[in-house]
Structures are given as structure tokens and as C-alpha cells.
Length: 170
Image (cartoon, rainbow, N blue to C red; front, side, top):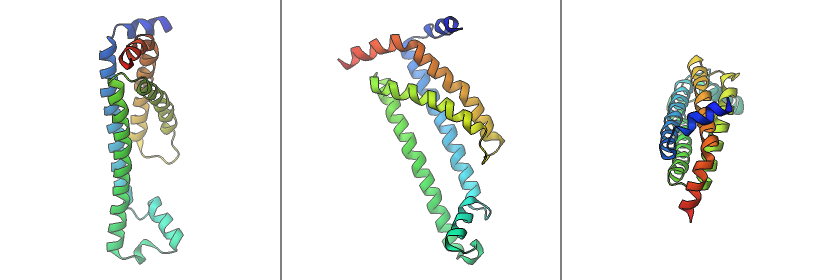
């Protein structure tokens, strides 16, 4: 099996595999971020959402006791916070992807670790007790082999990528 994987990945030109990996990781990031933001947006306005339960428990008020304008503004604040967090994470990833494309060794380490831990995290997210729906489980199930594929590709191509990286850094 190891030999067949090595043969498969050796068919790629190193630069083509790097570009393919970066483009696919950006797509996977966008799929996750869009789904999470939309799910949060949909559940935010529900009076049974965790946010409103925490708010009412902390201040011992029910959502109906609060001014509707406050509720709208608070929901908008929470939604904008989620958008900001997603934007910062996505920007961080694009930063590393850019330097991975520019053949920086530290960025290679980040991307390969990101693929490994992305696969591991997605396995746990499939069995999320606070289920975000069947679509979320399907997305995570589909992402596990994708992240593993990129991790294995980077692992098998590392002997060819690292000399390229070391020559570029000189």
C-alpha cells in the first residue's frame, strides 16, 4: 500500500501538487466557514438557541422581557463577531498558503500539520453531540479523506519538496 501511494504521488509535479493542495484547502475552508456562519445565523434568532438560554440564565430574564431592538442589535453583534472570527482564521490560512506556495519551509510544516489535524478534527466532528445537522456530518465525512489525501501527498513528496524549499530559502 505504501508503495502504491508513493507511485501515485510521484506522478505529480511538485509545483502542481502544491497549487492543487492550496486551491482545495481554500475550497474546504470556505465550505466549512460558510456552513458554520449560516448555521449560526439561523440558530441565533431562535429563542431556544444556546445563546438565548445563556443570556437568560446569566441575567435571569427571558428573551420576551427584553426590548426587541436590543435583541436585534445583540444578534447582529454576535453574528458580526462570528464573521470576524471566520475572516481572521481564513486570512491566517491564506497567509500560510501564500508562503507555502512561495516555498517557505515553515509554511510547509503548517500546511502538513493543518491537513493532519484537519482530518483528525473532522473525524470528531462527525460524531458531534451538539449536532449541527446531517449536512454538517456529511461535510465532515467528506473532508476526512480529502485532508488525509493532502497530508499523505505532502508526506510522500516531502523529500522532493524540502530540497526545493531549501534551495529557495538560500
